Image (cartoon, rainbow, N blue to C red):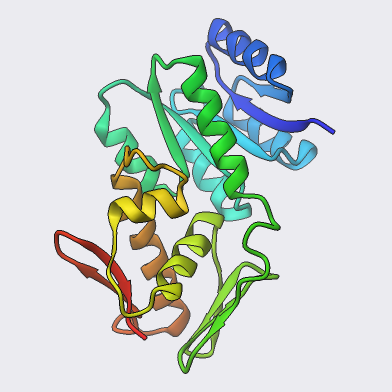
Length: 228
């Protein structure tokens, strides 16, 4: 069974190139050239991953990403203009799992798609549970119970929290997190870690209903740790 990938791109030449590349690599491609069609296909086709361009007519990529995150933990690879750091930061804050500046190489795009699909595989982390006085991980629902309140996490957020609690009390560096959570041993795109941690900490504080209730700690210049 082929893996369905939703490609949202309004440039017909690039959309065709992505379709050919992904199809030849064994994926089933579902394509949309505007934001509204992308959201319709998200419901109708249930893709395993979305490749999303920002500059769409009508409903733009930012709105598509926001609405997708309201409904789904679908892995999203954001296509951004080269050098547009503000776009990448905004995308990571909004919940994109990865980004790729244009123009990009075919092999890099395929490698990022494969990594995102690997990380979202439901069996990879399913049996790994954890609990202490304040925090409990629920692998079958990919959620965390923090101070008695459960919150759903994205794939990235759940794996990030798992890695930190496995090493409770120890500082895990940004590069180590990139390697263990993002399958990125080269340590590229280090800002992904910062914004994923921010989203995770915000969810845990909101679940507890207490802005001071945060089991994670940023260690300046080093990384992050879970305070047991």
